Image 1 (spheres, rainbow, N blue to C red):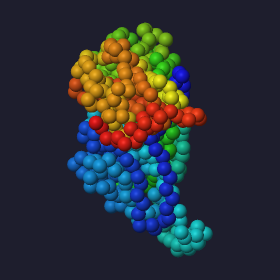
Image 2 (spheres, helix red, strand yellow):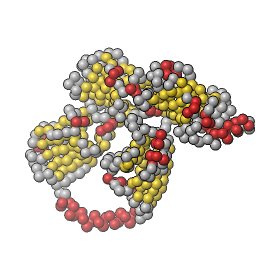
Image 3 (tube, rainbow, N blue to C red):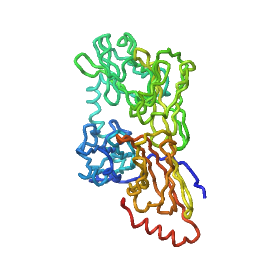
Image 4 (cartoon, rainbow, N blue to C red):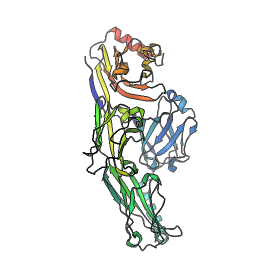
Length: 507
């Protein structure tokens, strides 16, 4: 029976939900992953609705908490031997209502590639009735509101939300006031990371973060007009979030503060794992000079493709993307800077950014594209002679490359190294049951054939291709499901199941 290849979008390997009550002493959020088999692993627990998003970080040297969100200071811990045992569970104490949210456990190896392991949805419920809390808060407010109004009579805070498409030439972050501001006031715009976006003082611009160099602009005589709005050129997904405009007196007192929430809508491209190529669109009607430089990068800042001086610059690409990218010829004339990425896998699920620079290094255009690659799912009925786990990619891989298939228990399914197969490294349950094609490194067809599959073989299979420096050149994940036959199974298959169940360590 031929395998039926379906595709499902998978963001994490596991999602769980936990309900607790405000005031509970602790909650343990579970996460398991074989970090003991990784090179210099780092474990990160995060909440992406917070800034900074780090809840807890563990490295081989110990906890790394300098970027931890202060809300969790002193309230998180992991087992001392977490990276040795693979038990990456997080203990959170002194539970609060604000702890409700989705917690993501991610693992990153020493080469910077990150994988989401699990998501935990934590819900903290309140014990004290909401109406009673509201009444108590109202009574407190009545007592202190008068004092607060006097103390903050010159301090105003309000919020706006601005939404734009990625790729627009500019966006205006509004900030206007009718308050008379002194001529020696200082205006600062900052983002949620406390990076300086723009500074205005004494009619002169001040020091700003290098990320925003040449991309911001404010009106002249802004203190007289009261229009402190900021124009931000070429906004991207990385800049979404809260931007604050703060006005200080000469003595450093806050005279005014307003917050603008910036939302940058990013176009999304979704493809099935296994397609030959996908196009990441980037078109512009802006006239581009012939001497511009076009860079495509992923959200880990790895260089995907470079076009300069009328031709591609493959020597500047990261090795992971070598031979896998293509742009149109004469791309500046039609203004089509779209990128073709060949043989995308789940490892390519990123936000990609196309940036165009002038000869002087100024940004002329910037646009984001989000790529979703749906994992491949193969489904067959128990009793078939074999099933193929597909993996096709660019050929002409290095002769010394290592191809390693392993299952969800981190058992070696098949290994190819030093120009030959390595059956002695296989787990016993896969001995004499796997097969790969000849000249796989030349053809790029790394598909694996698994013989006599049974229900016990259902699970996740990952193929990684390494070079001799242990850099990952290719990776693909395949979900395999073996359906149980409705009729009685013969004794041979029953024996195969028993063999599976008694071997759970690499042999």
